[in-house]
Image (tube, rainbow, N blue to C red; front, side, top):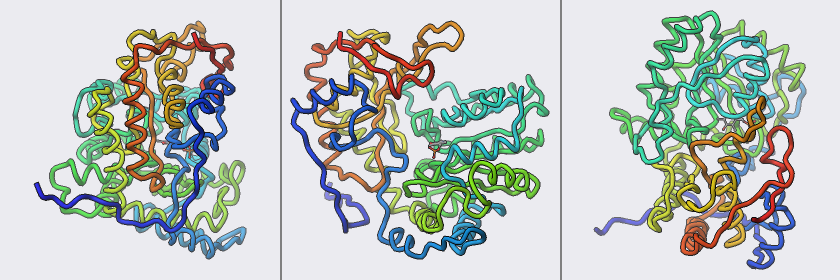
Length: 458
Ligand SMILES: *Cc1c(COP(=O)(O)O)cnc(C)c1O
């Protein structure tokens, strides 16, 4: 009854003023952008929820760490500090910086993967899948079936279905499987976490078949938070202890530091095997840079090390994940359908039930994205038919099961007052939802059409 209200464990030292256009101006801007949200100038957006990647606010400690950057080409103090932090936090012996997460995939997969290989896991992230398919290998999604049920309230919807994983291994044979990749939290699955019990079970299957287990770790700290609050037996463990245990089951990892290292650019690979590390060195030098900087400046490695220490603090994660949940709760209160439960980094609005009058071939999630921008200057991103693109062979449009507008929340950037605006604006659109009509594509690129497609109103 008389519970103390919640507030963030930080205060604001520096602000970035935002431009706020009026509704008519926004309607003109999005028309000019031909209804593609990527084509807007960021300045014309009030609340930007297009991604939580690289859009984080750094702390005073991270900013001051930048000043300590050692820009030596080889063996810089900053690299050594980053390496020591990662070794202590995650427990990997060999650490290799890269300029971002997909670069870590590029280097590691160059060393470990060949044509005709098979890589099972929970739902693979786009760039991970891209790097697998580019090498003429196949990604097999072994996520539990409940992951694609929007209303299922399971606490760990990012889990691997162990039976599917075993079936995949017996179908293709362990020699065809150079590694299993486990994404924590599962981005493609809506930022849903993987339980410690599932991580352990996956690792046991991998060990039986002598297959290395690699974590795609972009949101590992958010995953650890969910384990602490949702999984039996972890309530009294610190986030850092949970993180250490999670990674103890992995043989290697790739990291996009643009997520849970709370920086704007960066990434790295962590490994236990000296042999694989040696192979990666060659590819790092070719693609990224010398092995002690790999596309990062010394100052950025300092900020990354400081960010990892902060993102594995319970108070920070509580503020972060409570804010995502807060937005989800506010939207749900209005009767608007979203994917449940709220993920770690984003809320996904179900555009198919929002606009039942608009067929998927007229892009209801894109319509909702455009409407939300016009209503309040809020920018989300379509995860639906536009993104699903065409079948590369038949060129027929692929119609995905879920048609979603993703609202991804940058770390430490917006207040809950901003979240109130987002929910309010969705409520305004909801109240007049029958008035909206679909969109038609005017131009599309042969692949990855969502970035540059142009639309016209029907
Ligand atoms: C963002 C992301 C990547 C790719 O990282 P970039 O830093 O964007 O290159 C890989 N995997 C997951 C799960 C991600 O969220």
